Length: 608
Image 1 (cartoon, rainbow, N blue to C red):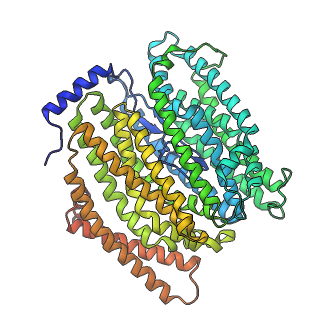
Image 2: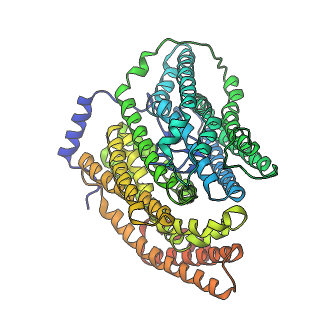
Image 3: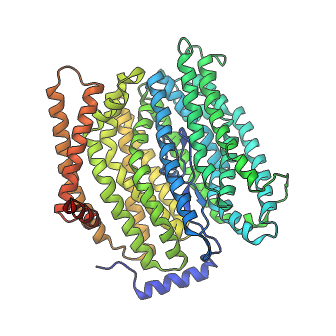
């Protein structure tokens, strides 16, 4: 089994990299990516056709912005970095819980219908436009140069940061104003007119939500500055503050008598104003929460409008990143138009299904990526391509054993999961539709994680072109299939077709990424991944069937229609038994990546 590249191939790669120009050495640009926290409701455009609202670092991004956590120097203390990592992990978990919480409450209050569709579409616009204006540049250019300026400039990079904030404020301010004027046009691009959509309501929400563009930019820049100064707490807790503000907003919304008026739509509607302004204030709070910490570092803002030549050095990389984001927006617009043109509530069901499917990746897959990324980046910086391949393979195999069993259980228990979570309030009438959407698309969880890992491998090699080309191929496939969905399925089933298309797109991304990585690096040691994938798939299919059988038995034993109680019983019993069967079979099949965990468990049991 070959896990590296041949000597001739390695020599060719080294020579090609030398011809391409200098690259960052360890210590000069310590770029260890960490997902930028994205509040719930933000479209993660740096993930392949990221659709749906998520909270905290994703997954990304496609949706995952890179911010820099500088590597500690030889004399620095390790515990501080360990403490920072623990703080970020806790904050990320709380951010995801609170982010999911406000989306859950929103569905309970207004259900899965035209109102939720309209809000969801409008709430993706600010983050989408921010990514196009500055997000891609921030990812690929600003952060590495910011860290370099802090090290090399006599003033510790303060003048550079002041220039950056001044130019960004002008760009974001102009972008916000132009977007407000263009709100009706943006609505027309993203929403298909018809009985199942409400363009005036989307436009009304857009007027209230588009100012978030400026606040998203400020939050992202403040976060980057603080992390470059090794201040980690405020940037990762800021999205939690955002989510708490939105939860409070929904509490006020629920207390207002009556319902949101859909016909006619009035900007003076208290429900509309409360939801739109409250969610925007949440993003404002996210940015403002970081200002005291910024001031404690000694930073003071001053207008500086001169251009810094260091930003121009990354022009080609920036262009590819902007292309990546633009392609994502095109795909998002097409899927949104198809979703809003289907039965009312289809788009909100689609986004909630994708949000729930991202949770396993956000909790488990993203943790795997966070651990593997610094190793891949270091290997790429040293041009140690065999080590890069080994780390990539390990990350993919760990993702497989962690996520595939969960995907199998979500396939078997999609409907009980939705019933358990959404059988109360206005969302209860569409809970089974949401559950079926989860069940038919859960197969995309693992391809999504592996596609993200492959994207980061290219990023580690400072290659922004290939991820953009992969995104282009995925988007073309998704657009073609999404357009075909309403032609072959009735309107009420379009949402299921869209969820399948979205997940299938990541399968395409996985395959295309594999081909390109093989072309770039040579053999990838795929036999080990295939062995792990085969054993885990077999165990997951059997365990998934067992979980479905348990859920079916619970449903048959309880009289009446399935609801909240039945859903929870099915979910708990089927989930626990199904996962126990899966991991038991994986142990019997000797899945190598789980053997250390099984060994420690056996030792602990023997000690008892």
